[in-house]
Each structure stands twice: as C-alpha cells, then as structure tokens.
Image (cartoon, rainbow, N blue to C red; front, side):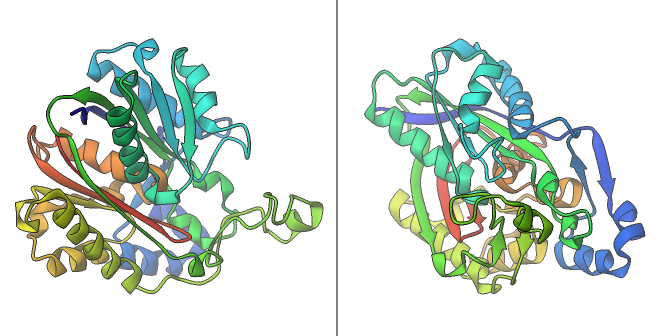
Length: 325
C-alpha cells in the first residue's frame, strides 16, 4: 500500500515588521485589548508589489532544497490560500511558473485557514491512488493585510507569511487520518463580500469598503473550543491511536487562550502544543505549516513524532490531519 510522508517543510515571513507599538499610534487602546485577548505582539508584511504567490515561492524553494529535489521533480502543486493573486487563474498555476515546476499539475484549495490540513489530506489521497504521483508540494500563502482597510483595527490580526511541505510516496505510514467539519451558517460573519460573482466589483462596492476584508460579527468561542477537540478525537478514532499518544497538537494561530483551553479539554500538557502568533501574527492559510516548521526547527517535532494539525477557516471550514514525521 502506498502512503504519503512529509519529507520537508519550510516557513517564510517577509522582512518588514509591523509591531503593536506602531499600530497603537493609529488605533490606541484597541490594540492593547486585542493583544491581551490573542497574545499577538507583532507581525510582518510583504512589500507592496508582492502577491500571495511571491510569499509561497520563497517557502517552496526552501522546502524543495531541504527535500533535496528540483522543482521539475514535483508532480503536483496544491496551494491553500484565501488571499489568491487573482479570482482566476488559480494561484497554484502562477506559482508553478515562478518556481519552474514544469512537470507539475496544479490546483488551489480555498478553505481559508483550514486550507493546509485539507491540502495535506488531498495530497496524501492523490499519492495513495495514483502511482504516477510521487511528490506533491503543498503551499499555504497569506497576504490578508493587503486586503484590509487602512482604518480598520482588525488589521491587528493580519501577518503575511507562507509555508511549504513536500509529501512523497512511502512504504511507511505518514499521513494517518483526516477529519473535517463545516457550518456555512457563519459564512457572512467574516470575509470579502464584493469582487466575486455574488457582487462583482464596482465603484459603489469599493466606496462602501466591501472589497476589503470585514469582520461583521465574531464567531462564538465554542466553534473552536468545542470543534477542535471533536476533530482531534475523530483523528484518534480513525487513526487507531490514543489522544495521549500525540507528541504535538498544532492549531490555527489566532488566540493563545483558545489553544490552552483546547489542550486542557484534551487532557494534554501545554508543552505538547506550539505557538507562533506572538511573533508572526495571524498568518491565516499559512499558519499551520509555519507552526509545524517552527516546531521542527526548535526540536519540539522530531522524526517519528505523532502530530495533529487542526485548522479553522472562515465560513466556517475546519480540517485536521494526523501524521508521523
């Protein structure tokens, strides 16, 4: 039986740092409240001329170098993002050209911050079902700060960044189990509501700010505090392991208190999770892969480790995968 294993990871943030102190000069005490609620202290933003594919390109190059393979050895590229370069064509095909991966097929996954776990699940299935697919490049890219209004204090959340993972066919199990949840009842709470087919871009939409990302209403805390443990329990049941066997559980990087509450619910010690939002902000579609890469770099995720990756995206979409490094 063919399996898929993650053989390399990479994370990337651009050079320009945007600190809470800088935002505080514009938004005042609102930043103090958001920092206390989330644990986010700073973030990095891309140059004005960059798109999501430019962030993804830099992470992809590092991941391929660490895997010891050339771009033209990749059979498939899956890009997870809700800040695509364009409505169409897909960001993955733009990235394929920039990377020089001439043999690769491509497609995008648009599950917001659940995109990377979803893409890993798809990549694993594609490798298992198709003998001609040996290596898949999964990229998560996020450039939401470019799509936020300059006077919107929710700019606090958005840090630009990217992640990349190389998955390869293996005789040994790598991706062990997957789980997904969704509830479209919440679809109008947070998003960019003009510029698509529901409301094409127009002068009126631009003037009203509907082409910018907007938080219309917050999500109830239980969406993640209840939903994430459900996903982890599904992974354990489907993967045939006990939750206590997890070496590491990684969650969407938006609110530290939520992660702590979920770890308590799962009866897992805080040492078995990892957080990067304090240093990089909310990097959305990229944050799961970036956190895994950071955990590997600091020695918390070692070869053979059993890891759960759990992501939540607006809509809402939730997705999780369990894997062994």
